[in-house]
Length: 451
Ligand code: UGA
Image (cartoon, rainbow, N blue to C red; front, side, top):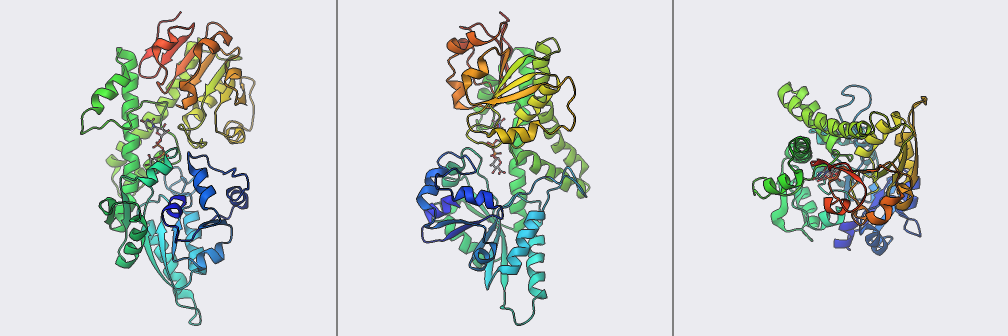
């Protein structure tokens, strides 16, 4: 919406959230926004309260809107039918009910949230049944439902939105499609705006994420093979990526994919496939998740085994908690699972991240009801130097630029000897580490000889 307001200054955009705290943060005088995203703040500064408004006033915002985008979260269901696989659509449903209640005249409803295939049908049903339930005195309301899934990635959102590879609009109502594409056409070439049927649009979104996630599990599977055989996964990525049919992007091996989308969307496809009796298809995609889980586990196991099976009372510093760089989001971050494993084994963790909020980490790591004797402790620091002091090991979990610029000559001597570096993102060059007194493990390469 920040991009639409920037590109279409004649359109009034209102962002509605029922969460007062979040809206207050979006409206805060000092621009302490709830989301960290490069270059977002300057856009909000420029357009806030001019064409871009943040409010909790659901009723009036819907009533005056020509187009409503449903952009609520659709996490994996925790209980009930389809728990662990299907998406929880309660917020999509309640949004549709609010739209049905407050909309006036004709309203275009755009499904922006990532949803299971055929959710548009559910939205349509809610909208039309509310209309049918209304009495004849009420002003007549009509709706068109479109699907226009989002393909931006966190950390590069502004860039992705300004120059998308494509935009999808799924639907049947030609007028509504034309109205929505007129907005996109202000800055996106027509050739990149794809019009499809509703279900293709919904399924394309899930499929794009499934393919991307599959690529990461594929290269992560190869990273383990590289470590055993003496190959270097970065050389392999470069070699295969040069083949145009494969392409060079999304071939960085890692401690596993995280974020709110990949796993959720894979689970959705798996659920959908099983629902239609396509068990082989479901099993195929399930393996992408299993490999991802294995990759996370094998990293914590490797760290623990390096210390001969016990990390109890050792100071281990985790550099980076966000699921990727340039975001403060830790949803499904691989750092959570690695940190939990190490804590269970009694380690004293020092967690450093340039953007993540300590309270968010606490929500993930302090979940246990009972603390056993073997459990370790964790603390958070924004001071990189503090993370090195007396540390037995450093584990790089997120590829933040800050970590590319670490002065290893200055910081390594602060660690306890023998000291270890585990680079799970493969971002640190061997020749730099070879100049300091540090044992080194790099993903997709393995151990450098111990000193
Ligand atoms: C992903 C998709 O890339 C977007 O196109 C999509 O719109 C979005 O999900 C969504 O559905 O909302 P996002 O999860 O923000 O975007 O971030 P990605 O850049 O895709 O990274 C996902 C995870 O994969 C991260 O944990 C990242 O570290 C990991 N990754 C990515 C790798 O391990 N290796 C790579 O080469 C690339």
